[in-house]
Image (tube, rainbow, N blue to C red):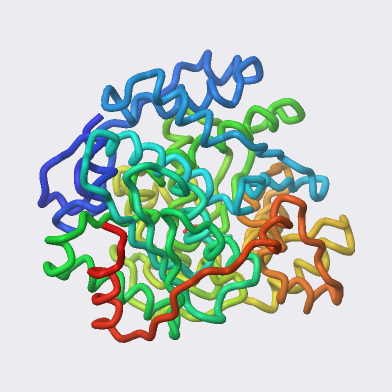
Length: 438
Ligand SMILES: *Cc1c(COP(=O)(O)O)cnc(C)c1O
């Protein structure tokens, strides 16, 4: 499979190069040169297939010959070795729980797949690769866990001091080994600015092979489509009509993966991209503008979706052949404010004894409103994180403490290790150049 740049100013590359580069040299996102359509027999017999078989079948053509079949099968198996249950919340809404991976958020799937691909590609390379990533919480944990112990790869994560939740902080700071956490006395934007500057700094890039692990990397984006097929495997047992799929969206990688699955043949009635107060794309849907407007991001309680200009939206549009009308027919896009989000967490808990995390709650409301207008349809929301990752919001709304799931209890026995740094670029640069990681 070849990947072209959506800026069309760089050459096409294979999966290996796209994974290592992350972004095309012209600044564009890589996009597959053709999207294969799965045979209808695949969907018809989906209930007879294992997760691993489904995953391998949907990923195979995107990876191509650059990873041999046996190794790709192992990578897929290790990526999806937890459950993706579709759980009923009400009579017409289910939750596709994507938070049963090691860091309790859907980003585990992309991070696990990407780390193993990079490990595979780098196995005969004597020079280590340094993955540099800024996080507002979820990305860093998933990347740390995914890359932990991967040979030839060092990971440096920058996170804003006192601005991530306890569980998130432990997920970032307790690995050790090839994972280093830098605790920056500033905001997420400060962390991101330091990372961006480092990528442009020849003093650093001449000494270290840097790569990023953000969601525009094809090796993080593409594997996310797998769980929409796992959802259909469960959905079709009880439903004749295809689902309305609602995805809480920030950078639009996850919804773009859902649309990719649809393009490959996944039965879908309609898509909803649910945003918080960061409403650049909802505004575009209600206008006839060609481009997304520029806005500043605003802070919300669903902070993993506080993105002003979603990078992956262009991939969604590309899958509709840049036809805005066709896209608007198949997809809705709405903005939900914090107050309605909190009300939904409360209402769903009272009605169904189910705790939505703030991101999933944004999606739940969007889907509920849509289904009120379309009472013949049913759907599910992608539950993108476990509520324990956002205890402050949940405890404020439900007036009770939230139990720590067994999967993360061990973190509380581990020692936090991080390196405190200011937002001063030169200090960060000194550290990066002279740190023992090479
Ligand atoms: C990252 C994240 C999102 C947003 O996903 P995108 O692919 O960036 O749209 C939503 N919810 C949670 C919990 C996240 O961590």
